[in-house]
Image 1 (cartoon, rainbow, N blue to C red):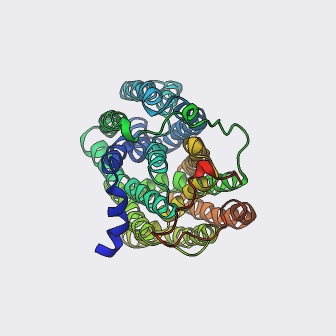
Image 2 (spheres, one colour):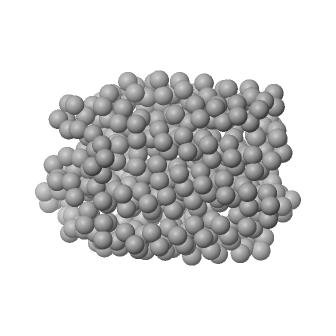
Length: 418
């Protein structure tokens, strides 16, 4: 086990790394809790999965649309100046949503509330940008991005389970309130760490990507779109599947088990320095996701579902790490937050469509139809990965850096854009 953790210990020994990794994790709590918390609150208050799916989809669409503009703002102004007002919007929107739902207000008011809350900035990219600023070796960046993916899964292990318990056993909106409090604490600590904050783009002499998006980034964004379809459909379908089985209260536990598999898969994946080409690994893990979610869609009961889910989940974090690494390799250092935002747009659009479609299917045909949709989306993800191989290869195919004593590869800001 010590050998597996050596690479992680190495990168966390850099000054400030452990502090921003930990506080960044806390600041990202809404990524794991907000969507499922809002779905449960609306479903409990209004007794409609379809309505919950619609509202969740609206929030995710707005979140996807805001990622690139807010990421550009972060790159241009710096994390501290940009994220303080964006965090305030998240708090105001969430508070409004709770008040509307608890007074059984109209659906359109919930749309507005979740839309405002979704303008929360590129939460998932802040620490990844700090790693790209801090590290210079591609192998270390691979390990750092794998660590971030695994840390995300800690949230997705604990978050849905906690939200489900809070919403069903204590008070419907309590999960949202916990997410807000954790976000405020985490983002406050993160933004106070100015020594590891990447400098604004103007200090690096760079410029925005604009619409000059490298082909490899576009390819990775389409893979992320497929993953978003899977996630959006699967989260809602899992809640409904557990509900139909008479165990709604443990739906969050089922999601946590899948995230636990993703955590383990990401940790093991990032501990190894791979010699195979990045594009090959991206395609292979997309195929593994298809197999895993196809098996989940035919699980006969929640016990088999949980068992398969752990192994299916083990493919998620490595795939996300691969798409993040594609972006890191082909954009300049001052564009990393913006580059990663295009992946979040893909995921966001996918989650919105997946949640909306699954909500309709569940309402009209039952939970199993939503699981079938998620499995089909996983197959589509693999198909997309295969179809974009030329773009992935053109942007990332090169000899891996294999010796710690060798001169490190030039950081992204010094590489030409593919």
